[in-house]
Length: 128
Image 1 (cartoon, rainbow, N blue to C red):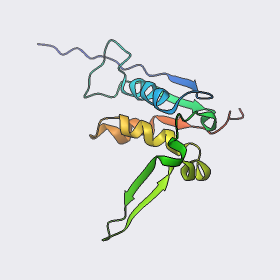
Image 2: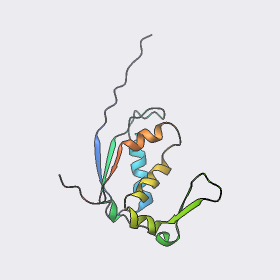
Image 3: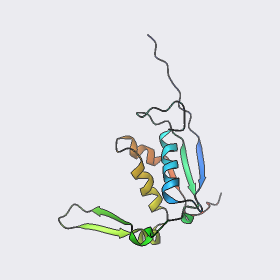
Image 4: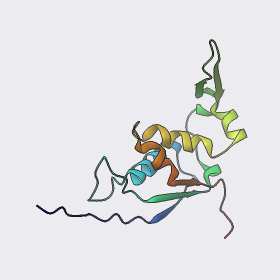
């Protein structure tokens, strides 16, 4: 029995995030990275497209998330649970909330780091 090789064709998609809501655009990007919009989708393969996001600093945040949403991380030492709000995260890096939202929407397996390598986020329109 011969095995049929299915070639993976990957293109780079550019998405303008200006005026888009954070969660909605993050779920669309996560689906594109996984390849769920293609008829040849398989959960164990990387066959999604590369994604370039421009104008990430113009993302909209609904409700009172800027003041109330908190991101936590642990250093590994006892009692060292670090936390920062979405507003503080936006001040330091405007692309980080989108990156973390997409990261959380991808499956927690060996493919996640590889899928994140296919994502490029620019805070503004890059000069060519």
